[in-house]
Amino acid sequence: MAFVQLEGLGKRYGEIDAVVATNLSVEKGEFVSLLGPSGCGKTTTLQMIAGFVEVSSGRIVLDGRDITHAKPASRGLGVVFQSYALFPHMTVKDNVAFGLRMRKVASGELQQRVDRVLKLVRLNQHAERYPRELSGGQRQRVALARALVIEPPVLLLDEPLSNLDANLREEMQFEIRRIQREVGITTLMVTHDQSEALSISDRVVVMQAGRITQIDAPYTLYEHPRTEFISGFVGKANLLPGERDGAGVVQVNSGGELTLSLRPEKIDLRDKGQGRLQGNIVSRFFLGSQWLYGVSTTMGELSVVRRNDGSAPLTEGTAVGLDWDATLLRVLSVDEVPA
Amino acid sequence: MSTLVAIRHGRQGYWLSAPALALYLSLLVIPLLLTLVLSFNVFDYSSGINGDAYTLDHYSSLLGDPYFYEIFLRTMWISALTTLLCVVIGVPEAYILSRMGTPWRSIFLILILTPLLISVVVRAFGWSLLLGADGLVNQTLQALGGSPMKLLYTPFAVVIALVHVMLPFMIIPVWTSLQKLDPAAEQAAMSLGASHFTVMRQVVLPQIMPGVLSGTLIVFGLAASSFAIPGLLGGRRIKMVATLIYDQYLSELNWPMGAAIAVALLLLNLLIMLSWNRMIEGRYKKSLG
Image (cartoon, rainbow over all chains, first blue to last red; front, side, top):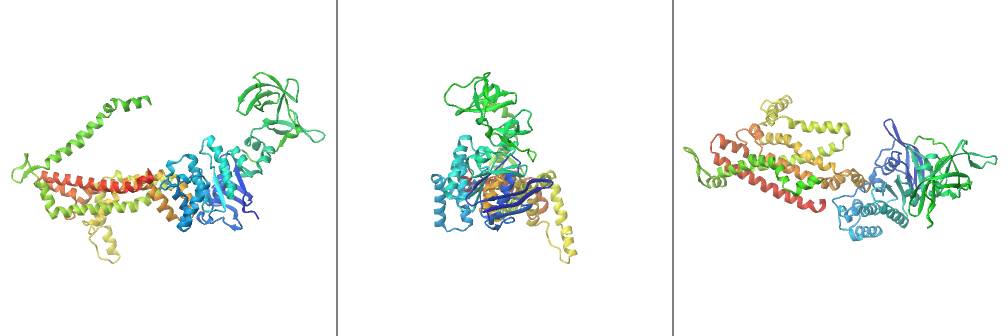
């Protein structure tokens, strides 16, 4: 049996189903992200696991123990909140020591454990400061240290990076992953940011309207999105009509019944007249390491991403041919839930 | 933005606040100064106030007479007890209120504030109807086989009515500081193993201390200078300082003595409130910034 097991977990608010019969198994030491647009039920799921939201149906099993109706205090899980939820009237050290004091840990050991975890999050220089004297990233680390110091079986992260600016967010992403690896703690993270979910998780759980629609490793999820919604939510996607030819191979065809997904970086730009499809460049955006082109074709406007290899970029108005490897086309199924 | 900056740095600011300053000066500062001067004027029962002669007699009799001591002492303990009861009742009430759902919260907040719309005199009469010798409370006691108790014209009646009147002044500042609390901090404490009681004591209460502090200052100040409630519910025997001042002015017609008592009350109030503020703020300043 998996370390954390959600069995038919559901939550109803009056007439509204926030989470519908969700099944999920998380292995020990795994980093799993719950990814979805706001209102998809990912946070509600996390709060049910933490014990802040009453479960309407189903079970939550942690390491063989049914914790469905246990009080938050008795679950012993580490929770990091979106707002960090630090205690503003306590120093960093006292914030971190809070959970140990609740567990009546002897002062010598308490001191040691607080020091160790502050070192882990690289905040040992700031132990005597108050939260208001810290930057956003440092507060985030305090919240992480406070959750980790009690050595919880599972770490729950609720949108942990959404309050940070872009540069810091990337830095903290890798920091969270480093700490998670170092401690080897089973982690569940809720996020609406697909790049965050892809870059640091072992597996990504996509949720939509209270249901799980796909569970896969980040690479598989990106390369094989199941539905139109997922292909657009996780990365960028060009949607093309298509059909299977006589040999069963998928081909782009304007009269086709299927919806195909083709990632912008999988399209090659050729000279005019060559390739599978002709078009004109209508827009061009510089993204630093890449160029993003908009190409208008008979199948609509397609996005094409090309590596910035130092050569002069194509200008708007240039006629180009588009080519791709047909095995990179993905057939999408119709969304089973309204997005 | 630029106008604001101009106002802040130019003289315009003073002109714009002139009406308020004039009002403040004419309604507060000047009467206070007149009272202060009056408290040093000579008074004689046969000839009245002599505005040209000055004396320290009123202050020395205030300091020398145990009658005044007793009234001042009673005023202070009644105000302190009222403040304490307002904290004990008002803080949990504000907390419960802040945790209520959307329609109920506004309804109960209005319910708590509506007593402020009713005159203190009317409310004091209400209490005297309840607590009187054959008021509702005593009737109930007798119906249950007990003997009637003397409730009206006791410190008990004064305290209970003062708490009733002052409670909103405690709830409002505490409610305001509760609004600034992150509800997730309580969840965080619970996830770390804290009981509800521990969450209240170690997480919520320390954060709302600024609100509790302003509440206690307002309630103590208003209670120590309250007039209508001790006047109507304390009767002739349970005098407080404000009723004493009234007596000096209107029964004894000794205005300078009344002024001296008023000045003494003001100074005592200031002293107590400033040292209380210092004590609490000193303890929480470092942690709450």
